Length: 148
Image 1 (cartoon, one colour):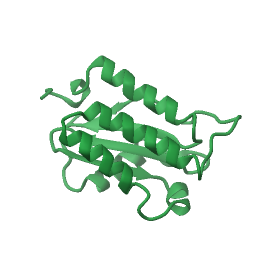
Image 2 (cartoon, helix red, strand yellow):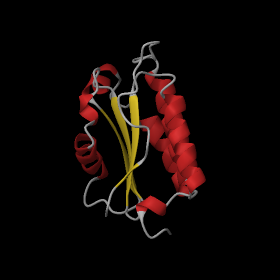
Image 3 (cartoon, rainbow, N blue to C red):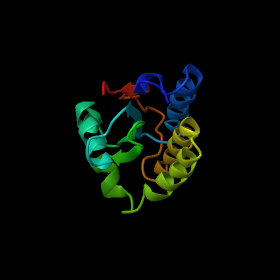
Image 4 (cartoon, rainbow, N blue to C red):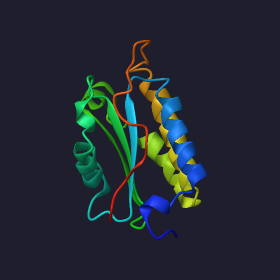
């Protein structure tokens, strides 16, 4: 396994993940980010929510940010949607996406698991937050990396 979250994925895999974010955002006005760190102390959803706030993802106009969080050494991941999304979608909205990602992760295909999850999210969010012709990319598409 890679020694740090930053080099867990190859350069090509990182490019594929960023391209998936850009493609997904063509379907939705939702803003998608990915944060990767080595260790997750405690609950993955709580940690993802921490990073969501730290990254300023709650500052989008429609409160429609989505964070895909992955702790590579702790073997944990979570998906967090902002309050605009959570008010619009059913309670179990993220479960299908998380299940399909987990299947890929179990096969140690982490990059494709993220890519598939991101693309699925873009398609699913289209119903609630369709892409607008005047849509502005409010958040960076780059992958964020933790220091731990």
